[in-house]
Image (cartoon, rainbow, N blue to C red; front, side):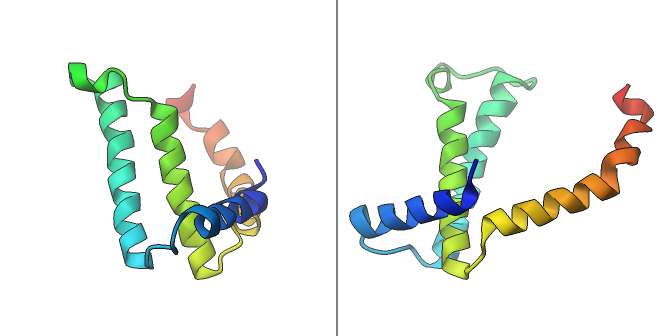
Length: 108
């Protein structure tokens, strides 16, 4: 996925369909709300809680996309280039974690 283009797409959508970005604190609250919806689906569908009838038609992909949308909004608002940040983080994790995960007995 090209995060830089995704950020541009979200920015264009906000300009074309929204009035403006919600402020950063509102978007942070929105992010928490969306992550909570993802957690509810996962805990009930894949965890030990039973899934309520009203939750059975919820689309996990759609809820994950909601999380991504708000993350992209926050990145745009705060001047973060997510592609650069993600690439840097992946390089760091690759260097730091390669041997750690291969030697983890819990993962075998």
